[in-house]
Image 1: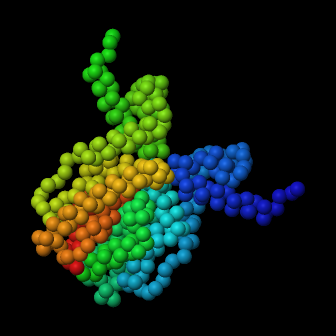
Image 2: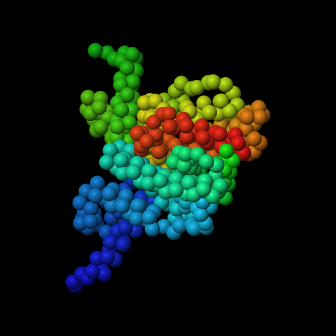
Length: 195
Length: 195
């Protein structure tokens, strides 16, 4: 039977879902053509059609992670300090899907830190994230919700804070349930507002 | 020639140094018997004497990382808030050796997050770290250097803050030179002191 465009796209979606499940369960260390093939109920041979090399599979996985991160729903409850808080809450692993994405991000740091090209790309992404946070910090300062100060340095602090909270919550979900993460973040924001 | 105990210990030190260099340069994804053998100028066969499996090599590498972390020199400039600041500075990648250890820690998260036993062990270590920070927070509160508040929650926030700063500094050493890391940390401590 001839293959249609729909078949092809459906198959790509299946492959993406299988790659995602393998990364989520086993990290990048466990992301192999064989594991994805088993997850998909397909042969390794079929998989090499999509991913001729391990490197191609890793690149695909990283793209998938970025797409899912960019397309996730965002909080939008106001401007200034409320907008800064929203952006930080959007990063935290407060729900299963965000936990899964964060886990995969943290797992990708091994490969990323050991590859100069990837490492530079990650540095660029984090710098963009800080720039977006800095705009919200500056707006909160204009509104008098945050004291004056170097908005970029404050944004770098805020990004550090949530990234580290992510790491701790990933390792210790029982010790860092969603409510506690939010309390710890609100302590931090109270500190920013006070000085 | 018969092997002496000194030979054996010298060889173990060489093996440890080779494992460390491979981890540092290639992360856990690049930590293979073959890479360690090449670094050591030895055969893979000799290496299997030390590490019968890949898993044994990873466990050895993690032990080595923990030993080096435990035995690193520590700052000791006072008590209370000064002691809290020292403990946080001790974690940051402010010098080449600390950068190397932090890089290896961050690279180990991939394997650790995907292994329930390792994951529980990491959670326990971070909890111990938080408990030590909480003691320093409580002492700073007694001394009136920090306002009253839940010292464990403040410690969890402080640990989050430095962990995330580590991650950012690893990816972007140019954007986060030592002085900037210290400034960002001091902003954070000023926020803690103020509210």
